[in-house]
Length: 55
Length: 292
Image 1: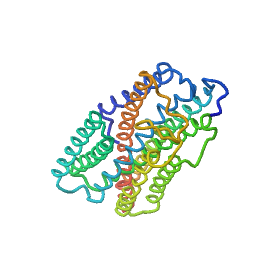
Image 2: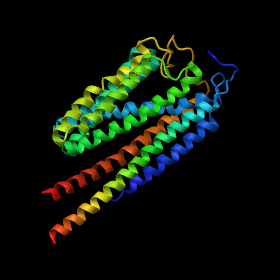
Image 3: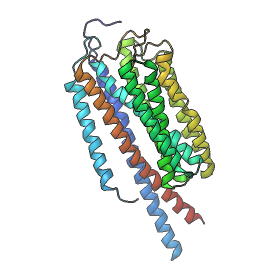
Image 4: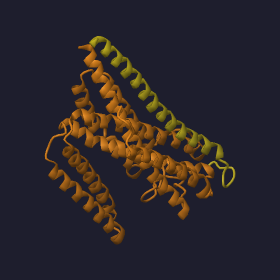
């Protein structure tokens, strides 16, 4: 192993690891919210379109 | 979109609270590992995300079967087989622990997996929903499996950099996990290329079932082949220079708490993703209506 000292100083890697973990989870949550918003907008437009068609 | 049920709202908050507690345990409760230092703390969430990734892909086999069967069938034999599998798994686990029979450890895992598969199938058939309903489940599971497996692979690379002195090596575990991830990315690509919803669901289901072959290969890769990847459960691989570094009770407590947390988080995200899938289906129906 290539450790210079015991315990080795690997805090930066831990921070990077948890940034990836929480970052990916955050991006996924954001994607869920944004997809829902887009669908709501689509639904609104479609419903308007339908009521106009009916009238 | 139908309003979120109170049960799901409670689950959302429970998952969030558990994640906060698990993070606290990782950073402030579990001690610093003596050789690897702080980067060993990545292991707690690395293994937990790997577990839920496997679980998601495994459940896709059951929901895929329900898509192919159009949700129909007699649930009774499946439920009997399911509960029998779980009981056999539990007994085999007991034999493994009390009689030290190594083979029983794998018998228990296999029996429990078959049991869980049969139970999902049995309860799924009992629900009496059609293939579209189970297709939403399948795609939600694959999506979540991909997210958690990606976290698992990426966090593993970060751990490997100071420990193995490289971000990536052609180790059996790393290679099989990446192939598994790519196989399921191809699942989404396959779906995107098919317009007919019936064909899309059927093709996707068959592909997801076949693609599951990569999951046990990934899981057993460090147990079958010579690998430098640590083994958390079972005998350490002779090729591994370092193990998972978990030596104290507080480390094990944090580890199992993280496993539990990510399982709850997975269930919560799964239910939310299904809700989104149903809403997308509703909008799709509206689009079809407006086109006619």
